[in-house]
Image (tube, rainbow, N blue to C red; front, side):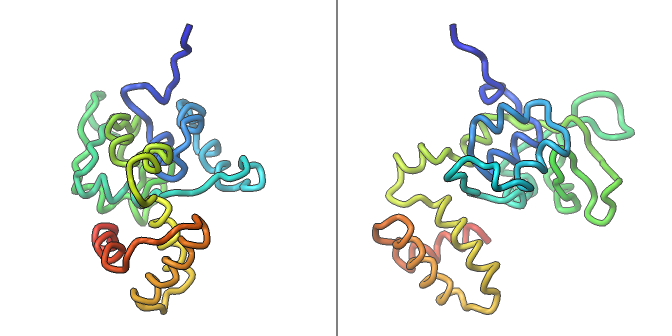
Length: 194
């Protein structure tokens, strides 16, 4: 008999969505099905407790941008509104900060406009492929490349884009022991990421 996993649920909550974007680990999505704030924060607070080889593939900001850009639909209960599920307008995400499992306004962390947030798990899996799927489909692991790029960009804010690309190519080749994508290919991806 196969046991049902929260990973296979039709909808995911905000903590599950954030965990998938950041780590792409099915068991984290399962564990966060009934998450509170401290459960999600513990993932990043205690890296020494992480399994060997755990990588961070994306950022919560990637999720917020997808919601703001309309690539991902979300719904929830509007605080102070009628007690019914409503679609959260994409334009509202400009003003929000994601603090799993809550959403708050940028300058007002106590002001929580939506509760019971949810997204379709199928949309999450389509937008943020698992590491296994990526390695099987693409010549390059673009999730890992983006992670390396973001890290280099944060660590070296004064580097030009060309310098960052050179560093990225070197890091990729060293890490994966294979040729990195061409400069023009990386530049096209950076346009999409920005």
